[in-house]
Image 1: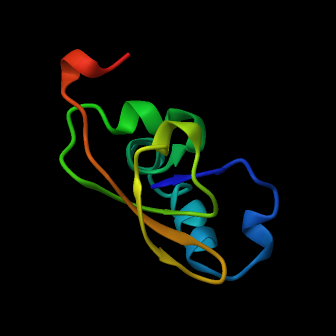
Image 2: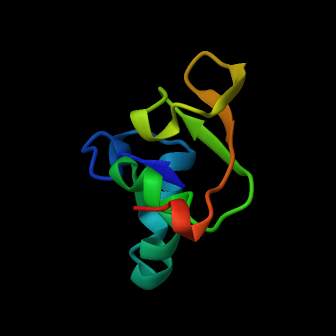
Length: 88
């Protein structure tokens, strides 16, 4: 899950992001595997199949992602994974 997980407003709102953020306290290793900062978007795509992304806004690393749905607070994007040879 890509997001700005260091955002200080996450614990102040009762929503799905807060639930995931709070859950890391119980299993930090799982949190590190599942909750990725937006800056790691490019690495997430390496070796993956199709990625489904919920984001506030597209990033440069997701420039080739297809916009599927624009909601009030988020976008639903679909992006192709990349072969390991094409990864930085």
